[in-house]
Amino acid sequence: MADVEVLPDAAVLIDGERIAWVGPRSEAPKDASIRRQEISGVLFPGFIDCHTHGVFGAPRLDDQERRALGVDYKAIAAAGGGILQSVRDVRERSEADLESLTRSRLETLVAHGATTIEVKSGYGLELEAELKQLRVIRRLSEQLPVTLIPTFLGAHEVPPEYRNKRADYVRLICEEMVPAVAREKLARACDVFCEPGVFTVAETRQILTAAQGFGWAVKLHADELEGSGGAELAVELGALSADHLAAVSDPGIRALGASNTVAVLLPATMIFLGKRSQAPARRLIDAGAAVALATDFNPGTSPTVSLPLVMALGVSQLGLRHAEAVTAVTINAAAALGLAGDRGQIAAGYVADLVGVAVDDWREVAYWMGRGVVSAVWTAGSACPTSAAPIS
Ligand SMILES: [Zn+2]
Image (cartoon, rainbow, N blue to C red; front, side):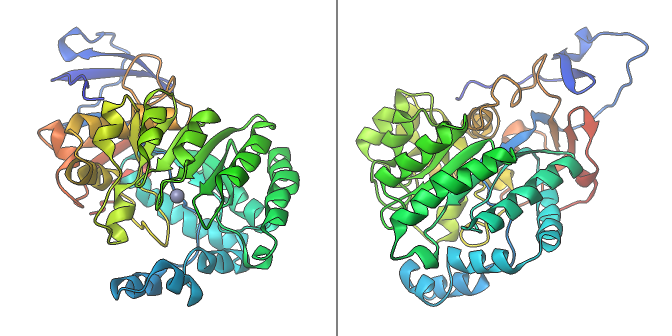
């Protein structure tokens, strides 16, 4: 992960939507028909945000203040906050309203350098409201100059109407929701919040196995608060990724290290929640795991839109080297979405998603905490208009 190649005075040749050549500028093809554009600063592969909950209504400001005053997660939920507050909100909102809110938020992520963004459902927890979120993602993927990867997260929480019959909700997901989402081809992967008090390892296995039956990839919210075997289950199922992992066990670390399942770490979430602990990134890397970083962009626990900020937190909070933080939002984040052969590198044949960063030393991308360092974005070979709006 620490082995990134840095080319000084480089040139990149783009042909259509793909990169055709990259190397020292002195050796660049000299064909007169090539249109040239000089940029100063550093050119990175387009950043890949492999874990967001980008379709939501209002921010959860009361949760933030209650937490600041020491109120715990369960008491916040009992007071009407938490995930279920966003669920009530999304169920009530029109699809058009959700679409316009989500559009402006995703444009902000792009302005901070994200060119491929995974977006989960999971604030519906009933078929129609889940489909509504996924349709918003599909429509925006047709409108925005960015690649959106939709993930079905109907198992984000047990909805209140199923509190006393959770097995029925698991059955509803497996037998009605997953088949309906598959019929409309609205998701590529299925995710489950596998955590004591949310979905057990057995329930998670049941849901993800049903999704695999439809040919989907699977991912898990695993071992966020308690090590409960989520990472081990992710490896057992051949999941693309196991995400969070702040409380992953030693056997979980060993299992991830010996697997192709990417460990997706979300340091902004732990910071926003006021936690003193973070996922054991160094131990995961030393065990051989591929570590990726993501924003976890969501209204309750991580409202950040900036992968460069998350990279800075990766260095300061997780103990990553600068190069490891770059790998974590490019190649490894692509692998967490099953796209590593296609994006995440500036190399011939890869999609021409590129980010210009206005700094002198490439390591500064993970240094200026919270300053907007991204100066230009290209997706599929074209300059991205959203990058024109300066955001800091
Ligand atoms: Zn999440």
